[in-house]
View 1 (tube, rainbow, N blue to C red):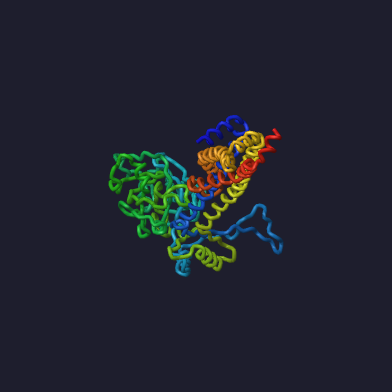
View 2 (view 1 turned 90 degrees about the horizontal axis):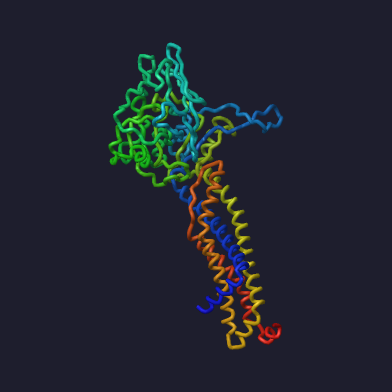
Length: 507
């Protein structure tokens, strides 16, 4: 205790230089601990993601190519797609049948939905496998009337000779002369398979949603099996349901609570009506909580609503061609092998280099690798800062030993052992080192938060949640303290071995 009090007195006597040494240790430990904690957080999240159903999904889309004229090299500025490919359901099923690492295919188009607005536009949101974007639906009546909603369009076909639909989302179509709310009666000449979208089906006496905009997806029935999503109440969507039987919506566990806060029993939601982007849906199911939460996605499945695809609503002839296909790999399968198999299969059908297959696991690994490279550079700089702080402590203790040669010689002359002198100097260094390490550890969660926010806000791909790793931080703090004490041991050893006569004579 006397050694500790004496060390504190020495430190207070030299406040400025002690504060500088302490600040260097704090910054070095905080930056290094925060950086390595982030690296550990990303790797842990990647390990979790690699075991999730999300990691077993593969997307096939057309590869971007450039026009080539004769033997001339293609110009890379202003690339242009050629020979646009539109996959068919037959292609998808054949790919499933011929590739052992592929279990099924499904449609999934992620977007946002408005629950109360009279009109809205669908938008996409991030995440592996997420597409999104505006849509266009066009209804051509026998009388020649046409109406449109949205922006971009994808291929469509005509049904019953009375309607032509070009669809890419869940937004409703409004026929000529129809009311602004999207109400369409059979007297206006709307096709039979559009009748279910009439606003008059909505029971206005039902409780209104408390959230105006939610995230969701248009999916086929195979989507739920691909992601191991099961209904806790009601049922999930089925590929066998078409037409008016496929107007259901499935809610995530958390979304059901947010939409209808006063409903204590979620099973009571089954059968209720819900308006999404001006279309009427019947709630057919509430999902069990997804154990993987937000693995690899910006939005958890627990906070999403799932509605049927256009093919399920209007029949398979409404969606015969796809610009993008999604495949699921079984748990016993190899996603990397599935990517190769699917790419080879479609390239053999449409030409070499025509398509690009990408697994969610590869995409997520790429996102993690980008962040780890940045953090690795920062870790090197932080380690250099921590080493500089240790060197500063060495210089500080060396100068103090040199200034206290006479007091040390007197201690030795009256009987103090070498170890007692060594311990006194080391206690002083330990007070500075421990204080700096603890302050650095206390500051490191803030470093994690700041760096994590910077990396995720500037990321062009998937946003990844980050968290502080306490064991890593403690290990870094303890390591920094050990290095600091190791450097301080050199001047402490030199001070404990002073020659008494020389020290007294020099003073």
